[in-house]
Image (tube, rainbow, N blue to C red; front, side):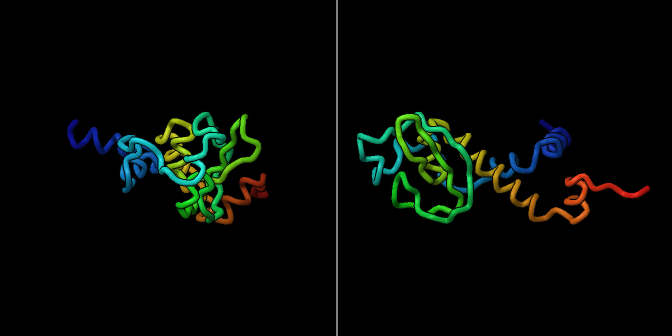
Length: 134
């Protein structure tokens, strides 16, 4: 690709997807297995087949590995486990068998939070159905 087509592709790609490719950290696909602590060691708790219900910023400890402090909690639910678990992005990725999707879900959540924080008062009024008197 030449420089023009790369620049055009960058303009059409949403910001959160561009940032996702540039995220620093561990490439989860290269890891052989999740952290061997906490509930990962227990045989009575399912390790795969979970689904993500929501993401919130609880700022607690990951309930699956019981080691990692997390800022954004992925609320995970399984049909064979009675309670939902608040997990970090890495553990949630292993629990759903799709680490990239969980990472993307967290990036989109952060992007939406930023959009809500930086919205102008006029945009808030328009979303509520307010319009001018003209």
